[in-house]
Length: 260
Image (cartoon, rainbow, N blue to C red; front, top):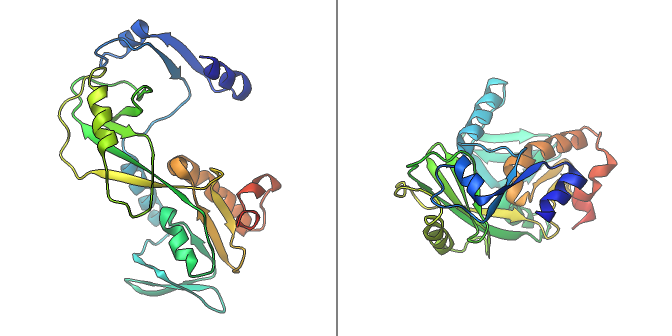
């Protein structure tokens, strides 16, 4: 409660503190009253992040963009810019943006960069929605979040520190679901491959956005950690301004030159 009040006082992040019985009445999917709840009033959620991303891609193509499949490891500098091999042949451009998420450091080793990235892995699974869940619900005690999605209730875990190529280990998800079932009405698991994502985090938890220190016309845009879905479009605007020579000094902490 004190933290929520401080966030509203200092950063205008609005919330309401609700006792468990009241919140259960608002959320019929709850099987029992929790100890209490903080309802964040201004947060957004998305029922189908993959569908939204595909819609972005379609809009990009409608506006004249091209999406090609290629081999990022073939990236080569030329006298006029950069070239890369794609399924449609070699493609060249004056500028290149490295935006490969957790795979960015591996590519950049070829160009003499050591990126001290930390990898955090999370898992999720979908479960049949037997009773409608009105809003995302974080079970703080068990470290899992349940959210109403287009495929059912998605249960998402916290983060585990891993190496990039470690095998999947969904025990955290299994334990969390078992605990969550005592609080929340959920049906059987939806049959699907086990999803997991490796979040590309930097030690200072800031994304890397800006000009490559050692190469002309190369730009970095990665390291958004858990917030790539929301931060990515914002930092893309910052990067576009930087490429155009219009960056504001407040974004200097994101610059690669000050960090590597």
